[in-house]
Image (cartoon, rainbow, N blue to C red):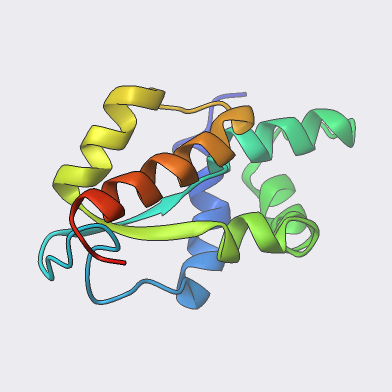
Length: 123
C-alpha cells in the first residue's frame, strides 16, 4: 500500500510538541536556521521496531494506532538522544553519516558532535 506521507511523519506529528529543541546550535551557538537531530534516526528506528514486532502497516489508521506505543517504547531515542544543530552543522553531520544514518552510528554521531563543540571552544 502506498501512503501519501512517509510513515515516520505520522510519528513526528505526535512527538514533535515535546521535542526539546534548544534556542542555539549545540556546537557553535548560532541562533538561526536551527535543526533538530535524532542520533537514532526515527525512520530507521520505526522500521526496525515494526519488523521486530511483526506489524503490518497497510493503511493510515494502522500507523496512527501504534505511534504512541512506538514513542513510549523508544522514549529515550525519540526525546533524549537528540541535539539542536545549526543547518550547516546538521548538513555536515549527514555528509559524514549519510542521509539516513544507521542506528549503529548513533554513538559515533554523538562523539562527532562533541568533538566539533570542543573545536569551537564551547566546553
